[in-house]
Length: 100
Image 1 (cartoon, rainbow, N blue to C red):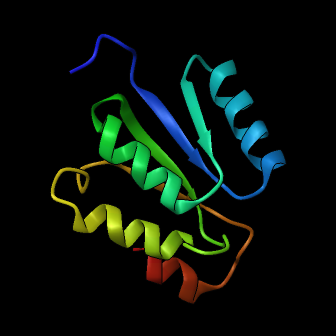
Image 2: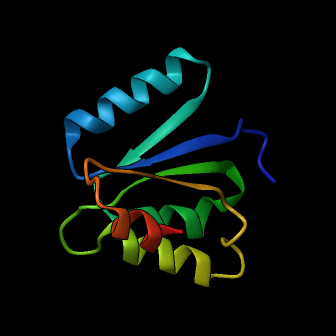
């Protein structure tokens, strides 16, 4: 385990949303790292998983969306313990159920 403090990984394809979330987290004393897609998130988690304490994951993203990223995290034995908070403007009940 690293001596660095645990951090939140913010995954969103919108640069504005990422900046807002990172600023909010850091204002509350939580270190944050940001990436723009699910593939980049998985690369970070697989290389620095011990430093990531929570993932804030957007649902709607191009290429690898939040559903696929969440499934990959939960399918990986080394990562499945990580808490993932899904973030999205989608307000459909089916979307919420799919994440659960």
